[in-house]
Image (cartoon, rainbow, N blue to C red):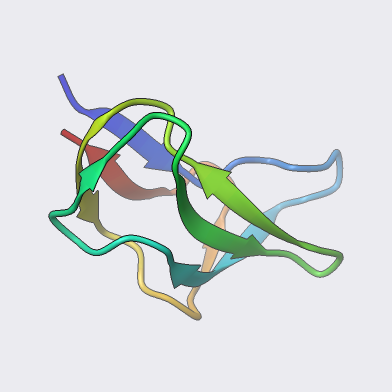
Amino acid sequence: MAEELRIPQLGVTMTEGIIGEWLADDGAPIEAGQPLYVLATDKTETEIEAPAAGTLVILGVPEETYPVGTLVGRIE
């Protein structure tokens, strides 16, 4: 079963975030805990880590703004 990668809510007032860059390529093998992408907000930039191992499927586009909870990728 695929693990969904959604924009996390990093703060109480956070409503959206920007994918700064993907740190792994689409189709790449991923290990649990590996940094996947940089999430930028109005206050900080944070590396978001893989919750599981598998193959990365990228759905989100770098430099685009997404609401919290938006599906931006999967690990299959």
